[in-house]
Image (cartoon, rainbow, N blue to C red; front, side):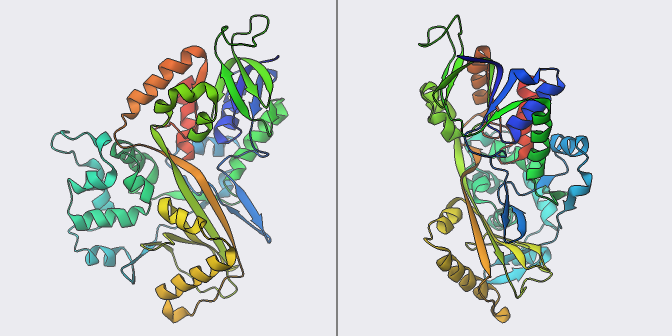
Length: 423
């Protein structure tokens, strides 16, 4: 049996960041090993290369309020990589393209701006906290304090189906305050793709001597001497691709579905199923005729959901970013030819005066568990405390985005390293 003090499962941003922080804390590189099930680092952070273009097809943006992300950028001198995302947004609603003022007027809102509406919705207390936001989704919760038209405004300007309907309102409000930055809207991308955060961390830990093993599947966990197969007093071990490795501490940075594929965790199924998997899909396209010149980001009520221009000069655009049932709709298409045909149809319905042709090419990127959401009815704090009470005494740490307080964001994933390990 192989012996390693610190075993990390998952070479996404959380696993790489954890190894980096352990090294800074003085842990020897030879005492750290990362097992990754795929053949690459990054997990749901991924930069795609296609026909000379590079673009992020997993995690899409970062926020300037995210202190741990900003610290990585500072530590590795990546400040010159920052490209601010424009704050201007249009909305395609009921067959019309509108700016913010037109949208507010269309819904006869008494609020002067979306910022003011969001501030009210987030800060309003429900009847002296009579209602438990854990028991509602955001749509239900907002409906208790706002008119139907203002709730519709919130839904349209948020843009995401999952956060509005699947996540409980308690956690939804947390992520709205801390991550979506509805008020200041200070988001950015990185010039060479968000994956560069993983690249610099990976290089650092490799140079230090940390071992990273790819195509290594976690099959089972043993946390006591009663487990069959222990050797010479080894009380704790994992089975990875048929090989047993003893550990002092085990750090798991995997998705909900991954836990359910491991026998050890099946008895905790009700605990791990307190979150749902979020389906996400991005479609990128390149047009010879740049019909979207100078257009800002557009939020729609149709299957495109988000339209996000990337490069007006080269004609690169994220023609659709969708979640939940919209993501499933696109993923159900059998070939790219039909996707191009439908894209062109829906775009010409939106912009009939532009006579939009089919794109030169498209790439599609579906994430079956692109993020996770705490279910309605779940008391997050109690679940997190229960997980900690069960697993930390066994030197098992549940880390990463999946069961974090700020799901769907890189900051939430790496924040768990600090909260659980106090480093």
